[in-house]
Image 1 (cartoon, rainbow, N blue to C red):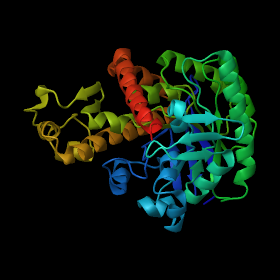
Image 2: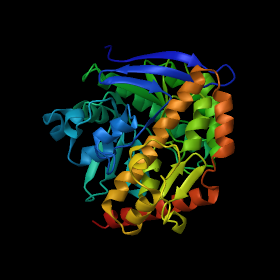
Image 3: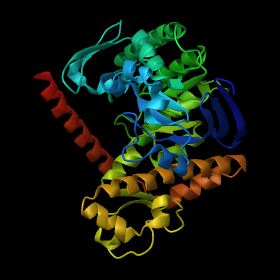
Length: 399
């Protein structure tokens, strides 16, 4: 099997949606695809065998976290990330750029790279484009991403341009550095430009013309209204080469995957499905339900009628409700399996609709039926995350 190859199997003539096939050293990926996130070499509470049973074809791991512990040299010594985590399918590792950005005052960006303090113990580290390539080579993932700068929302046009141009220079250095390491790995370029339409189109053209076999769209879903995110993609997609897969970084709620597919995206990743599951939020075709709710206390049927995930095939909603109310560990596994299965089934449905020409109908029917979390809920969740991150960063700064 070739180290990397992307083919387009079908396209939606009325939209930018397409179904594709990606070949990697560890297997084939059918797009559109949702990638479960295994930040620290594990998708929380779910085993590799359960991921396979749910239909996962590729997972994402985090360079920043694995660099800090257990360390990429140790993972390399133990046979690489695939052996280390007992996952024989494709793996994509991000660069850690978003995590470094989220450290706020604990990081400093220069032309050379990013200097930051670990969120674990306050120790100082330096990430450069060259160092990121070395770490990801030691991890041995199939698809790797270069160091980039994620601009905050909101930011000025000048800040957006500076971050974009710095990212482009780092990506040029990453291309050179990668040549020293594993030829079987595939380096995707990252498009930036914050929320400036002209910058987004410019970055897409520049990165699209560089010798990256695939492209990731970064710097979105960082606090902006969703319509603004979609508007940026409307400027990005026409400027991208047709023959390269497109990965929308950090975006993965059900409605986002449906809409993003129509805007030309092929690959999606997000911690949201497993994160909300741990707090009781479970996906159904009509929207997210809270399994903690008293209305599930006596429901003898599954969480969602017609769902064929392991959880719904074997357990009643009443039992799953009981598990979370009593804070039993089994809940985290069953809830996460359900949401991961939902996302992967949705990706398969999207692919099938593109192939048979019915994607616009599928999209419209799904969005008419599915009730997403409100903008206020999203804002509240985001503020809680930012507050928790700020508290953590304050603690680190005192170390």
